[in-house]
Amino acid sequence: MNSTFLGIIYFVAFSHALMLAVALWLRTEKGKPGKLLSIVLAVLAYKLFEGGASYSGLYKYIPHALDLMPAMVMVLGPIFYGYVRAVTGHKPFQLKDWLLHLAPWIGIWLVLNSAYVFRSGELKIAMWDSITAAQGSYRQLPTEIVLRLLAIKAHLTTYLWLSWRNLSAFANSAKTLRSDNSSDIIKQLQFLSLSFILLELVWVSLFIGQQYFDIGTLSQVSQIWLLLIGILVLAMGFSGLQRPDMIFTLEERLLISTEQALPQAQAKDETDKVKYIHSSLPESTSDSIAKLIEQHIEQQQLYLNDKLTLTDLAKALDIKSHTVSQVINQRMQTNFYKLINSFRVEHAVQLLEDSNISWPIERIALESGFSNRVTFNKAFKEQMNCTASEFKKRHKAAS
Image (cartoon, rainbow, N blue to C red):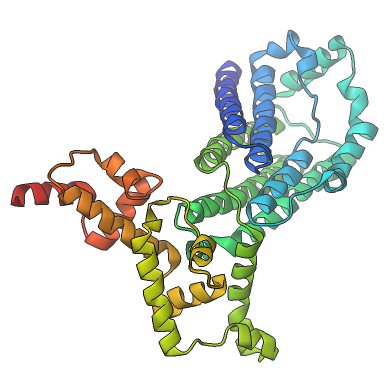
Protein backbone atom coordinates (compact mmCIF):
# COMPACT_ATOMS: atom_id res chain seq x y z
CA MET A 1 0.00 0.00 0.00
CA ASN A 2 1.26 3.50 -0.89
CA SER A 3 3.04 5.11 2.09
CA THR A 4 1.52 8.56 1.54
CA PHE A 5 -1.97 7.09 1.33
CA LEU A 6 -1.35 5.11 4.53
CA GLY A 7 -0.12 8.26 6.24
CA ILE A 8 -3.34 10.07 5.31
CA ILE A 9 -5.46 7.18 6.65
CA TYR A 10 -3.59 7.20 9.95
CA PHE A 11 -3.88 10.97 10.31
CA VAL A 12 -7.63 10.79 9.68
CA ALA A 13 -7.92 8.03 12.29
CA PHE A 14 -5.74 10.10 14.65
CA SER A 15 -7.95 13.18 14.29
CA HIS A 16 -11.10 11.17 15.03
CA ALA A 17 -9.50 9.42 18.00
CA LEU A 18 -8.28 12.73 19.42
CA MET A 19 -11.70 14.36 19.02
CA LEU A 20 -13.35 11.40 20.75
CA ALA A 21 -10.81 11.55 23.60
CA VAL A 22 -11.37 15.30 24.11
CA ALA A 23 -15.17 15.00 23.85
CA LEU A 24 -15.24 12.14 26.36
CA TRP A 25 -12.96 14.00 28.76
CA LEU A 26 -15.14 17.14 28.64
CA ARG A 27 -18.41 15.21 29.00
CA THR A 28 -17.22 13.16 31.96
CA GLU A 29 -17.62 14.56 35.47
CA LYS A 30 -14.61 14.72 37.73
CA GLY A 31 -13.87 11.37 39.37
CA LYS A 32 -15.96 9.34 36.89
CA PRO A 33 -14.39 6.42 34.96
CA GLY A 34 -15.02 8.05 31.59
CA LYS A 35 -11.88 10.11 32.23
CA LEU A 36 -9.81 6.90 32.16
CA LEU A 37 -11.33 5.78 28.88
CA SER A 38 -10.52 9.17 27.37
CA ILE A 39 -6.87 8.62 28.37
CA VAL A 40 -6.92 5.22 26.64
CA LEU A 41 -8.26 6.91 23.49
CA ALA A 42 -5.61 9.64 23.73
CA VAL A 43 -2.79 7.08 24.00
CA LEU A 44 -4.13 5.18 20.98
CA ALA A 45 -4.52 8.49 19.12
CA TYR A 46 -0.84 9.20 19.74
CA LYS A 47 0.08 5.79 18.31
CA LEU A 48 -1.97 6.56 15.19
CA PHE A 49 -0.23 9.94 14.96
CA GLU A 50 3.14 8.19 15.02
CA GLY A 51 1.98 5.91 12.23
CA GLY A 52 0.84 8.85 10.14
CA ALA A 53 4.08 10.75 10.72
CA SER A 54 6.29 7.78 9.88
CA TYR A 55 4.49 6.87 6.64
CA SER A 56 4.06 10.47 5.43
CA GLY A 57 7.65 11.54 6.14
CA LEU A 58 6.54 14.15 8.68
CA TYR A 59 8.94 12.61 11.21
CA LYS A 60 11.78 14.53 9.55
CA TYR A 61 10.30 17.81 10.79
CA ILE A 62 9.02 16.78 14.23
CA PRO A 63 11.38 14.02 15.40
CA HIS A 64 11.02 14.92 19.08
CA ALA A 65 7.24 14.50 18.93
CA LEU A 66 7.61 10.79 18.13
CA ASP A 67 8.59 7.69 20.08
CA LEU A 68 7.82 9.29 23.46
CA MET A 69 5.98 6.21 24.74
CA PRO A 70 7.84 3.05 23.73
CA ALA A 71 5.92 -0.08 24.74
CA MET A 72 2.81 2.09 25.14
CA VAL A 73 0.52 -0.97 25.19
CA MET A 74 1.83 -1.64 28.71
CA VAL A 75 0.08 1.61 29.67
CA LEU A 76 -3.13 0.79 27.80
CA GLY A 77 -3.83 -2.47 29.63
CA PRO A 78 -3.77 -1.16 33.22
CA ILE A 79 -5.71 2.03 32.38
CA PHE A 80 -8.45 0.16 30.50
CA TYR A 81 -8.64 -2.38 33.33
CA GLY A 82 -8.89 0.48 35.84
CA TYR A 83 -11.75 1.93 33.80
CA VAL A 84 -13.61 -1.38 33.69
CA ARG A 85 -13.13 -1.96 37.43
CA ALA A 86 -14.54 1.48 38.22
CA VAL A 87 -17.54 0.92 35.93
CA THR A 88 -18.33 -2.49 37.42
CA GLY A 89 -18.49 -1.36 41.04
CA HIS A 90 -14.97 -2.01 42.28
CA LYS A 91 -13.14 0.50 44.39
CA PRO A 92 -11.24 2.82 42.00
CA PHE A 93 -7.47 2.49 41.86
CA GLN A 94 -5.58 4.80 44.21
CA LEU A 95 -2.14 6.27 43.48
CA LYS A 96 -0.33 3.28 45.00
CA ASP A 97 -2.43 0.92 42.86
CA TRP A 98 -1.58 2.84 39.69
CA LEU A 99 2.11 2.82 40.57
CA LEU A 100 1.96 -0.94 41.08
CA HIS A 101 0.19 -1.69 37.80
CA LEU A 102 2.28 0.75 35.77
CA ALA A 103 5.58 -0.27 37.40
CA PRO A 104 6.58 -2.68 34.57
CA TRP A 105 6.19 0.06 31.93
CA ILE A 106 7.90 2.68 34.09
CA GLY A 107 10.81 0.30 34.73
CA ILE A 108 11.22 -0.60 31.07
CA TRP A 109 10.97 3.05 30.04
CA LEU A 110 13.61 4.18 32.55
CA VAL A 111 16.04 1.30 31.99
CA LEU A 112 15.70 0.56 28.28
CA ASN A 113 13.90 3.37 26.50
CA SER A 114 14.66 6.71 28.18
CA ALA A 115 17.99 7.01 26.36
CA TYR A 116 16.22 6.57 23.02
CA VAL A 117 13.50 9.10 23.89
CA PHE A 118 16.04 11.83 24.69
CA ARG A 119 18.28 11.27 21.67
CA SER A 120 19.10 14.13 19.34
CA GLY A 121 16.74 14.93 16.50
CA GLU A 122 19.33 13.79 13.94
CA LEU A 123 19.59 10.34 15.50
CA LYS A 124 15.82 10.00 15.66
CA ILE A 125 15.47 10.97 12.01
CA ALA A 126 18.18 8.47 11.09
CA MET A 127 16.33 5.74 12.99
CA TRP A 128 13.02 6.47 11.21
CA ASP A 129 14.86 6.67 7.89
CA SER A 130 16.24 3.17 8.44
CA ILE A 131 12.79 1.87 9.38
CA THR A 132 11.26 3.46 6.30
CA ALA A 133 14.00 2.08 4.07
CA ALA A 134 13.39 -1.42 5.44
CA GLN A 135 9.67 -1.33 4.64
CA GLY A 136 8.70 -4.08 2.27
CA SER A 137 11.83 -6.13 3.00
CA TYR A 138 12.40 -9.12 5.25
CA ARG A 139 13.88 -8.26 8.62
CA GLN A 140 14.61 -10.71 11.44
CA LEU A 141 15.03 -9.27 14.90
CA PRO A 142 17.32 -10.59 17.65
CA THR A 143 15.74 -13.25 19.84
CA GLU A 144 15.95 -10.98 22.89
CA ILE A 145 13.84 -8.30 21.19
CA VAL A 146 11.34 -10.88 19.89
CA LEU A 147 10.81 -12.25 23.41
CA ARG A 148 10.49 -8.74 24.81
CA LEU A 149 7.81 -7.81 22.25
CA LEU A 150 5.87 -11.02 22.91
CA ALA A 151 6.04 -10.39 26.67
CA ILE A 152 4.66 -6.88 26.16
CA LYS A 153 1.76 -8.27 24.14
CA ALA A 154 1.13 -10.93 26.80
CA HIS A 155 1.03 -8.16 29.43
CA LEU A 156 -1.67 -6.27 27.51
CA THR A 157 -3.67 -9.42 26.77
CA THR A 158 -3.72 -10.34 30.47
CA TYR A 159 -5.28 -6.99 31.38
CA LEU A 160 -7.76 -7.25 28.52
CA TRP A 161 -8.79 -10.71 29.71
CA LEU A 162 -9.25 -9.41 33.28
CA SER A 163 -11.38 -6.58 31.87
CA TRP A 164 -13.47 -9.01 29.82
CA ARG A 165 -14.02 -11.23 32.86
CA ASN A 166 -15.23 -8.29 34.97
CA LEU A 167 -17.59 -7.13 32.22
CA SER A 168 -18.92 -10.66 31.71
CA ALA A 169 -20.25 -10.69 35.27
CA PHE A 170 -22.52 -7.77 34.37
CA ALA A 171 -23.32 -8.44 30.70
CA ASN A 172 -26.33 -10.69 31.32
CA SER A 173 -27.37 -9.27 34.70
CA ALA A 174 -27.43 -5.53 34.07
CA LYS A 175 -31.05 -5.65 32.90
CA THR A 176 -32.08 -6.93 36.32
CA LEU A 177 -30.63 -3.75 37.86
CA ARG A 178 -30.98 -0.90 35.36
CA SER A 179 -33.78 0.51 33.19
CA ASP A 180 -31.43 2.29 30.77
CA ASN A 181 -29.00 1.07 28.10
CA SER A 182 -26.27 0.12 30.60
CA SER A 183 -26.60 -3.53 29.58
CA ASP A 184 -25.99 -2.73 25.92
CA ILE A 185 -22.94 -0.60 26.73
CA ILE A 186 -21.49 -3.32 28.97
CA LYS A 187 -21.89 -5.81 26.12
CA GLN A 188 -20.24 -3.37 23.71
CA LEU A 189 -17.27 -2.95 26.04
CA GLN A 190 -17.12 -6.72 26.50
CA PHE A 191 -17.05 -7.16 22.72
CA LEU A 192 -14.33 -4.51 22.40
CA SER A 193 -12.21 -6.26 25.03
CA LEU A 194 -12.54 -9.56 23.18
CA SER A 195 -11.84 -7.85 19.85
CA PHE A 196 -8.70 -6.27 21.27
CA ILE A 197 -7.54 -9.68 22.53
CA LEU A 198 -8.12 -11.19 19.09
CA LEU A 199 -6.26 -8.26 17.52
CA GLU A 200 -3.24 -8.97 19.72
CA LEU A 201 -3.40 -12.66 18.76
CA VAL A 202 -3.49 -11.63 15.10
CA TRP A 203 -0.43 -9.43 15.65
CA VAL A 204 1.46 -12.25 17.38
CA SER A 205 0.55 -14.69 14.58
CA LEU A 206 1.65 -12.28 11.86
CA PHE A 207 4.79 -11.37 13.77
CA ILE A 208 5.86 -15.00 14.32
CA GLY A 209 5.02 -15.80 10.72
CA GLN A 210 7.23 -12.95 9.55
CA GLN A 211 10.13 -13.70 11.90
CA TYR A 212 10.39 -17.45 11.57
CA PHE A 213 8.56 -18.42 8.37
CA ASP A 214 9.41 -15.46 6.13
CA ILE A 215 5.70 -14.59 5.65
CA GLY A 216 5.22 -10.90 4.91
CA THR A 217 7.22 -8.04 6.45
CA LEU A 218 7.37 -6.16 9.72
CA SER A 219 5.88 -3.18 7.92
CA GLN A 220 2.81 -5.19 6.93
CA VAL A 221 2.38 -6.44 10.49
CA SER A 222 2.47 -2.85 11.74
CA GLN A 223 0.09 -1.62 9.03
CA ILE A 224 -2.57 -4.24 9.75
CA TRP A 225 -2.35 -3.68 13.51
CA LEU A 226 -2.63 0.11 13.24
CA LEU A 227 -5.54 0.00 10.79
CA LEU A 228 -7.52 -2.30 13.09
CA ILE A 229 -6.60 -0.11 16.07
CA GLY A 230 -8.18 2.83 14.25
CA ILE A 231 -11.46 0.92 13.96
CA LEU A 232 -11.38 -0.14 17.61
CA VAL A 233 -10.74 3.44 18.73
CA LEU A 234 -13.89 4.68 16.99
CA ALA A 235 -16.00 1.88 18.50
CA MET A 236 -14.53 2.44 21.96
CA GLY A 237 -15.16 6.19 21.82
CA PHE A 238 -18.75 5.66 20.69
CA SER A 239 -19.43 3.29 23.60
CA GLY A 240 -17.86 5.63 26.13
CA LEU A 241 -19.71 8.73 24.93
CA GLN A 242 -23.10 7.04 25.31
CA ARG A 243 -22.75 6.89 29.09
CA PRO A 244 -19.57 8.61 30.33
CA ASP A 245 -20.97 8.62 33.87
CA MET A 246 -21.92 4.93 34.02
CA ILE A 247 -20.91 3.28 37.30
CA PHE A 248 -22.44 0.24 38.97
CA THR A 249 -22.60 0.66 42.72
CA LEU A 250 -21.15 -1.73 45.26
CA GLU A 251 -24.70 -2.72 46.24
CA GLU A 252 -25.50 -3.61 42.62
CA ARG A 253 -22.29 -5.60 42.36
CA LEU A 254 -23.17 -7.58 45.47
CA LEU A 255 -26.66 -8.26 44.10
CA ILE A 256 -25.20 -9.67 40.90
CA SER A 257 -22.63 -11.74 42.79
CA THR A 258 -25.34 -13.16 45.04
CA GLU A 259 -27.68 -14.01 42.15
CA GLN A 260 -24.91 -15.69 40.17
CA ALA A 261 -23.88 -17.74 43.22
CA LEU A 262 -27.42 -19.05 43.77
CA PRO A 263 -27.41 -22.05 41.39
CA GLN A 264 -24.00 -23.16 42.66
CA ALA A 265 -25.00 -22.70 46.26
CA GLN A 266 -28.14 -24.79 45.80
CA ALA A 267 -26.34 -27.48 43.83
CA LYS A 268 -23.56 -27.79 46.36
CA ASP A 269 -25.84 -27.49 49.39
CA GLU A 270 -24.02 -24.43 50.75
CA THR A 271 -24.51 -22.96 54.19
CA ASP A 272 -27.91 -22.25 55.71
CA LYS A 273 -27.12 -18.55 55.55
CA VAL A 274 -26.95 -18.59 51.75
CA LYS A 275 -30.12 -20.68 51.57
CA TYR A 276 -31.90 -18.25 53.84
CA ILE A 277 -30.96 -15.26 51.72
CA HIS A 278 -32.45 -16.93 48.66
CA SER A 279 -35.33 -18.73 50.32
CA SER A 280 -38.65 -18.29 48.51
CA LEU A 281 -40.99 -15.67 49.89
CA PRO A 282 -44.49 -16.80 50.91
CA GLU A 283 -46.83 -16.52 47.93
CA SER A 284 -49.08 -14.01 49.67
CA THR A 285 -46.11 -11.81 50.52
CA SER A 286 -44.80 -11.99 46.95
CA ASP A 287 -48.23 -10.99 45.59
CA SER A 288 -48.45 -8.04 47.97
CA ILE A 289 -44.98 -6.79 47.09
CA ALA A 290 -45.64 -7.26 43.35
CA LYS A 291 -48.81 -5.12 43.59
CA LEU A 292 -46.95 -2.54 45.66
CA ILE A 293 -44.18 -2.39 43.05
CA GLU A 294 -46.63 -1.83 40.18
CA GLN A 295 -48.68 0.74 42.09
CA HIS A 296 -45.66 2.73 43.20
CA ILE A 297 -44.07 2.78 39.74
CA GLU A 298 -47.34 3.90 38.15
CA GLN A 299 -48.54 6.39 40.75
CA GLN A 300 -45.17 8.05 41.25
CA GLN A 301 -44.35 7.76 37.52
CA LEU A 302 -40.89 6.49 38.41
CA TYR A 303 -40.54 5.10 34.89
CA LEU A 304 -40.09 8.66 33.56
CA ASN A 305 -36.64 8.70 35.15
CA ASP A 306 -34.39 7.36 32.38
CA LYS A 307 -31.70 6.43 34.94
CA LEU A 308 -33.99 4.58 37.36
CA THR A 309 -32.29 1.58 39.00
CA LEU A 310 -33.51 -1.37 41.03
CA THR A 311 -31.86 0.05 44.14
CA ASP A 312 -33.69 3.37 43.58
CA LEU A 313 -36.99 1.50 43.47
CA ALA A 314 -36.12 -0.56 46.55
CA LYS A 315 -35.32 2.62 48.52
CA ALA A 316 -38.58 4.23 47.41
CA LEU A 317 -40.49 1.14 48.60
CA ASP A 318 -38.36 0.75 51.72
CA ILE A 319 -37.81 -2.92 50.84
CA LYS A 320 -34.47 -4.69 50.50
CA SER A 321 -33.09 -4.73 46.96
CA HIS A 322 -32.67 -8.50 46.78
CA THR A 323 -36.32 -8.95 47.83
CA VAL A 324 -37.55 -6.57 45.12
CA SER A 325 -35.35 -8.35 42.58
CA GLN A 326 -36.66 -11.76 43.67
CA VAL A 327 -40.29 -10.69 43.34
CA ILE A 328 -39.77 -9.12 39.90
CA ASN A 329 -37.85 -12.10 38.56
CA GLN A 330 -39.76 -14.97 40.19
CA ARG A 331 -43.27 -13.70 40.86
CA MET A 332 -43.71 -11.16 38.07
CA GLN A 333 -41.80 -13.37 35.61
CA THR A 334 -39.80 -10.53 34.08
CA ASN A 335 -36.72 -8.43 34.77
CA PHE A 336 -36.40 -4.86 35.99
CA TYR A 337 -35.48 -3.51 32.54
CA LYS A 338 -38.53 -5.02 30.83
CA LEU A 339 -40.85 -4.09 33.70
CA ILE A 340 -39.97 -0.39 33.60
CA ASN A 341 -40.02 -0.31 29.81
CA SER A 342 -43.54 -1.78 29.79
CA PHE A 343 -44.74 1.29 31.74
CA ARG A 344 -42.78 3.57 29.42
CA VAL A 345 -44.34 2.02 26.32
CA GLU A 346 -47.84 2.39 27.82
CA HIS A 347 -47.07 6.06 28.48
CA ALA A 348 -45.81 6.47 24.91
CA VAL A 349 -49.00 4.87 23.54
CA GLN A 350 -51.09 7.41 25.47
CA LEU A 351 -49.05 10.25 23.99
CA LEU A 352 -49.34 8.81 20.48
CA GLU A 353 -53.11 8.45 20.82
CA ASP A 354 -53.57 12.01 22.10
CA SER A 355 -54.86 14.08 19.18
CA ASN A 356 -53.69 17.29 20.85
CA ILE A 357 -50.06 16.14 20.76
CA SER A 358 -48.08 16.31 17.52
CA TRP A 359 -44.58 15.62 18.88
CA PRO A 360 -42.02 13.78 16.77
CA ILE A 361 -41.19 10.20 17.76
CA GLU A 362 -37.86 11.33 19.25
CA ARG A 363 -39.63 13.54 21.78
CA ILE A 364 -42.26 10.89 22.51
CA ALA A 365 -39.43 8.55 23.46
CA LEU A 366 -37.75 11.07 25.75
CA GLU A 367 -41.03 12.15 27.37
CA SER A 368 -41.78 8.50 28.12
CA GLY A 369 -38.55 7.93 30.03
CA PHE A 370 -36.36 6.42 27.30
CA SER A 371 -32.84 7.78 26.98
CA ASN A 372 -32.69 7.36 23.19
CA ARG A 373 -34.85 6.45 20.23
CA VAL A 374 -33.06 3.19 19.47
CA THR A 375 -33.95 1.70 22.87
CA PHE A 376 -37.48 3.10 22.55
CA ASN A 377 -38.08 1.54 19.12
CA LYS A 378 -36.82 -1.84 20.29
CA ALA A 379 -38.99 -1.86 23.43
CA PHE A 380 -42.06 -0.51 21.60
CA LYS A 381 -41.89 -3.11 18.84
CA GLU A 382 -41.33 -5.92 21.34
CA GLN A 383 -44.45 -4.94 23.31
CA MET A 384 -46.76 -3.64 20.56
CA ASN A 385 -45.58 -5.79 17.62
CA CYS A 386 -45.09 -2.68 15.49
CA THR A 387 -42.95 0.43 15.48
CA ALA A 388 -44.11 3.69 17.05
CA SER A 389 -44.31 5.27 13.59
CA GLU A 390 -46.54 2.45 12.32
CA PHE A 391 -48.73 2.68 15.43
CA LYS A 392 -49.10 6.43 14.93
CA LYS A 393 -50.13 6.00 11.27
CA ARG A 394 -52.67 3.28 12.12
CA HIS A 395 -54.20 5.33 14.90
CA LYS A 396 -54.41 8.39 12.68
CA ALA A 397 -56.06 6.39 9.90
CA ALA A 398 -58.58 4.84 12.30
CA SER A 399 -59.61 8.14 13.92
